[in-house]
Image 1: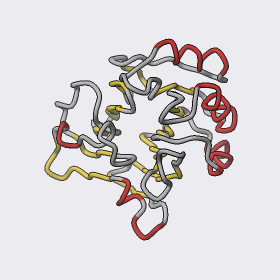
Image 2: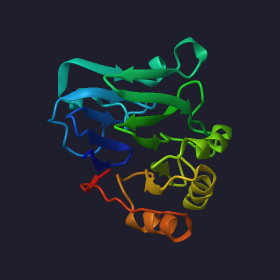
Image 3: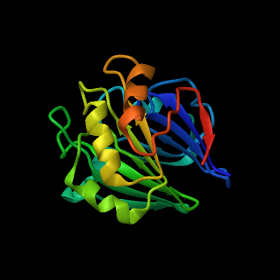
Length: 198
């Protein structure tokens, strides 16, 4: 069974049942020693793009926002059976031309990593994707606040809605995450250092 480790901020490690290792927005935490097959970066702010922290396999595929937006369109990638779809991410602090989110499909499990964003028009198309997980920022400073993130959760319709990037300055705010959970549908709290089976 695939596993997901939340390391704080927007940083995740996913290990598929077949051993594929994926890191998303490397920055928080220290669990980067398992060599990566895929690294995903949503944008170039320093709390999202520390790819040098990550151990890498010789054929590691690194997909950053500029690859995801190459040619001025949102591109998709198929890497050894892991399907990565880049999607819109933007707000007043994060221009759409420089930022993306990702929908990542690992062994039939669809996960939306929103990156740094507010509500986007594209989210209205997500219910048809039947997402298992949506990871939504809610710090209310660099991104939307927890109420706006909960509204996005209503639009997206994922089975599990997880608050992330919940503090503007620290890697995690349990208070803000719980505030999100009090109003968002299908809310799920995952704290830094928690690993779940997908």
